[in-house]
Length: 111
Length: 115
Image (cartoon, each protein chain N blue to C red):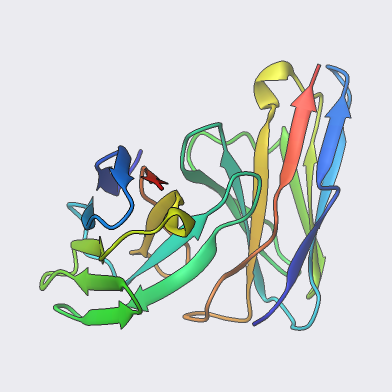
């Protein structure tokens, strides 16, 4: 059962464009993380959000955690080819620190 | 940040054989390790949670007799795919955490191909 739905599933944009990826669930999460994964490698943590309504910025990336802690978004400004990859959200809603990953968004930034 | 390694990085085996994958935390003691499976162009699916010195907790739908997990020390967990079949071919990723609410650190993954 996939608890976290991401949209869009695939996204192909031109360099310099802005984009937003959404991560939605019907469950309340204690915390939510965003990862970026390159083909053939493990995911790399970008950010962790824990407070409802929290906004975090990482250079051109802006992450927001929904007020009800059920959803999150990732906004990339002026996308670059180096942003290409699989973006994954992951949330924990049970004790034991298990994280459940979203369905993923495959981003391609065309030079 | 903390480093987690996996061995082997790639393995090809014949159908019916067993394959062992190691996950090691290199510079910290991992009280909990997690095993994920990822099919091509899909997300990571949590298979099991492994705590040192105790039996692993498997997610619904994951066969514990097929995917044997051993967490014998605070720096090593192993996943053994028993009697592997072609449908077990996948990318297996482990992660490790130093404790509850601590950051998970992911390994680089192991690509398994069963012929």
